[in-house]
Amino acid sequence: RNSPKYLVNSARSFLIARAMAASAMSARAVAGQVPDMVEQDDKQNDKPRRGQISAYFPSREVRARSPHRAAVIKLGLFAFFILSRALHPMLIDLSKQDGKILYAKNTPIVMNKVLTLILMNTCAFIYGGIDGIKLCWQPRCMAVFGLIGTMYAMGDFLEMMSMSKLSGGVYQVLLQTKLLITALMGWWLKGSRQSSLQWHILFSTFLAMSSFVLVDKATSSGGSSGSSGSLPLMGLAFVTLKVAVSCYCAVLSEKYLKAFSDMPLFAKISGLATTWAMAALFFSSMEPSVKENGFFHGWDHMTCMVALSFTVKTVSTMYLLQALDSLQKNIGEALAVIVIYMAQVTLPNFGKSFDLSVFLLAVLVVALVKTYLISPKPSAKKKTSTHLPA
Image (cartoon, rainbow, N blue to C red):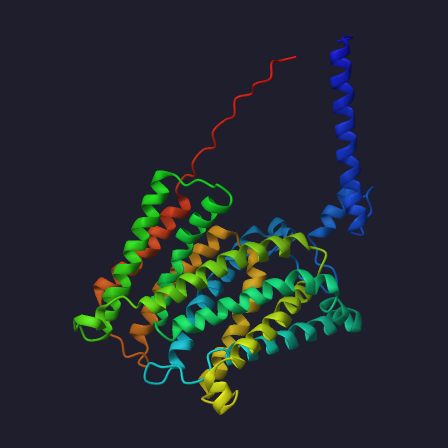
């Protein structure tokens, strides 16, 4: 114990522990918190301050006081997430006339972001007055979330382009390719590995989605063969690009929404919506129909509903990124496939009859997504140390 090597190791451990404690205290000090009141501050972090919405939903206080109520709230939030994901592509489908989108595809996105911007600044004024509005326009907020908003605008543009070629049900099914694209992006960018079982499930999911698209298209066209049952390559390409952009944006959004926990949620969404609206306005100005016939050409009450659904989707998505984990979000989006199909069969507006083969393929896609999400991840290889024990 009195050897020089032991004393050096002890001194080194003491210095490292002291440096870690100092960095933790300085981090709290930078965030405007009192370093020597750690326990009280952790308890207060779960309570939303004035002008903020808690990142925990339901809050830890509610979960501790009434677990049953917290479970019901969580289930309601999950159901709302499924319905919002199902209603949005259905409304775009209903806004078509003779299977075509007659209005400029980016105009609902522009109006959606303007509505989101007004809504978030109104919330900021209600909760914090003029100071709350200043939070929405602070340079830090615009710099971080503004860039992400521009990328989201590109994703919305690709979504509208794909929806002009596909039906809502097919579009929602093809969105499940995000599991395969995320796995490939993780392998390429970060070296993340998938197990052999996971790769087989992803490939089976891709085959099931392709089968669903082909069978659903052939059934919708009355069972005729030929080009009516062919795979819509342009729509598939737009969806693939949309998924790639969305996956990257979701990673950035989830990272910075939680990293900037001291910033109110309405300020974050406002920063996103500002550049989102400007980028969408730029895309819409490039459309020939806007140049020739004006911004609101082809608009009707269903187009207004599409813009409103975009607003609900934007605000709910940004909050749900903080409230639900990735497993619940992926399962919810997969379950939206079945909700869309059953709605298309039930509602007379779609004029679609029930087909057991299409329904079973939709259930198969959902089951494969669930199987992939619960499948065991590959275990990391343990690194053998080359250092000899002291």
